[in-house]
Amino acid sequence: MKTSKDYLDEANASVPRISAEEAMQAHGKDNAVFVDVRDSSAIAGSGTVAGAQRIPRGMLEFMADDASPLHNEAMKKDADIYVLCAVGGQAALAGKTLQDMGYSSVKNIGGFSDWKDAGGATEA
Image (cartoon, rainbow, N blue to C red; front, side, top):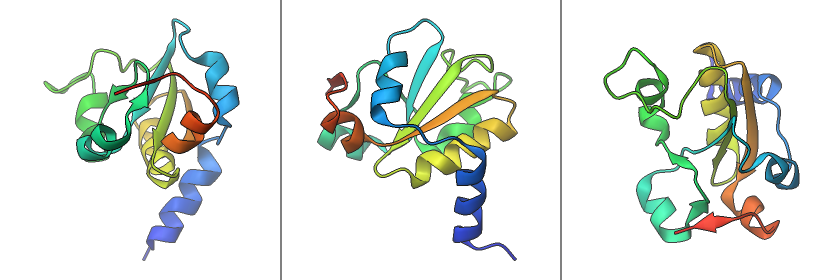
C-alpha cells in the first residue's frame, strides 16, 4: 500500500524541480505554459504567475486530456509545462500526472511565493 509520502517521493524523482529564476527565463516564450494548480481562493488571495493557466489539481486530468469536453486548449502535450502551487508538493504530483498522460516536458517550479520573491511577473 502506498502512502502520500510514497506518491510525493515518486513525483519528485520523476518531475524536475527548477528554480523560479530558471523558470523566469522561459516565461513568455511561445511553447511555455505555466500552470497554477492551487484552488481559485488561494489564487484570489495571492495572485499567480502572469498568464498562468489556472487549473485546480482536482480538475487536472479533465483539463489536460484533449479528448475531454473540459480540455484546456493551452494544454498541449508537446508544450513546455511549468507547474506551481503553494509550496511545491501539489505541483510535483500534478507534474507526475501530466507525465503519465503523455506530456513530455514538465517541470515543477515550486510555490508561488518562490516566483514572486524572485521578481517573476504576476497578475491578480
